[in-house]
Image (cartoon, rainbow, N blue to C red):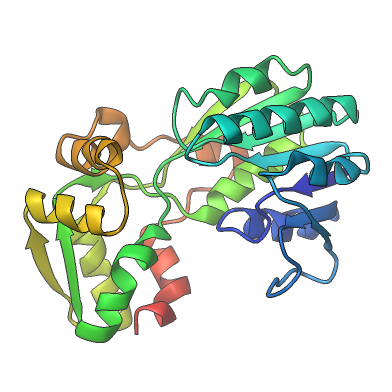
Length: 274
């Protein structure tokens, strides 16, 4: 068994590489640049770019399974690139593809389902690691979190649990034509997560609630367009659909182990907040 892991230096891909190696699987980790990469010595680092499918062709010839991470913004260029990668994988006799999707209705799903390969699709909830991107810097420097909608609920998931499901689907039978929606084990508010971070790092954190207009303006300043802001930031936070805060048992059902908690994630990453 040989697996090509795209996004191998990313949030989920790095965990997949480590977990596959721990199972004795031969791994090729795809990276756009060999510089500043940190892989276990057992992994083979290969160079390729998902936006340039031809760079993957030689690597697909040497594996029988593929983990594909799809870009969140499905522009026509990216859609065509993903479509070509899937077609090349089939032509190279790759037997199984596991794909990470960030939303239901991603147009690449149907291409995967019609590819002729065994397929599994993963749809995870928001990553726990997003707490680093949005909160870590101000906690470090000011002991403050500025956020809108502090009582909004979410079922954030540990990235290692997404990887564990992916590894199970890549290496074991029984996952063909499965679409797994993945959540963490708890539905938590922003306020409760900030409280947990404070308790674990032993440092008080002041929560400053932003108005909806401030959230909208901050998002624009960060480069997000109006459509993204209204749907993802305002719509999902202000009036989230039920599936945004409903805990599902999928991780434990697939892996046989309970999903990791936010407390576990913060404990592993507390040095980023101090």
